[in-house]
Image 1 (cartoon, one colour):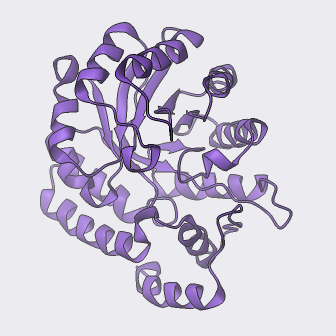
Image 2 (cartoon, helix red, strand yellow; image 1 turned 90 degrees about the vertical axis):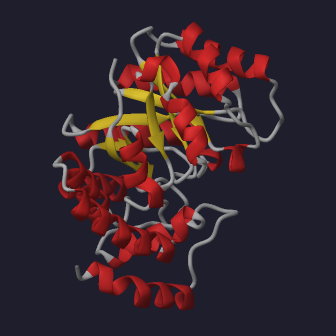
Length: 296
């Protein structure tokens, strides 16, 4: 089954002045990321404002990204939603349109017992073909539910199409525990942009990175240098990437990502309420900090 690797960009969703998905801006973003050398596109996740979009909008984004990518890079669609019914709808849609696989965040907000968590992923797994790749997505600081290695092991045993996990909390010990699952054959992706290189050294296959959306170059350089065995260059690039992550607050405000895309000559688009765009003073301050890196 297909797996994600390398620089996997968690894409933003551009909304136009009428609060509609800006399809042309989305296509522009796809071209930019492919040109810069990212390995995989990952729309409709946290960075894509997933939970404040309708299922129809998420399907539109998925179709647009997949069509624009045209097989040049892999495309995994995040389909996790607030209800099982909607998650299954989006999972089946992703498979139908030819995505390489899906990511599925844990149930959110309401506390979920281990038994219910396992059942949830079993139902999603059974809703698509047994050879259609699924990545679990653990982001406990946002979703309020965790995926312990013990629970993940039970999910793997009962869901043959669950091939990996995206882990978005900066716990390297937990990361190690995930890497030991399935005899070390379980695909583990780290969501902590600033720890991309250390996670590769530990055995992770890549990063699902929001910061690589507006600023992909140094993340691509890290991965290419690592593959070439040039750890000195990889470390230098990681240090620069970390400076960029600090400036962009590592995804704490997706309005920053959209503003940087705008600085780079693209249509970043608006945020969707209740989220807000950066104001002019915030944009000016951001530009002053990021401008030296834009010139590199």
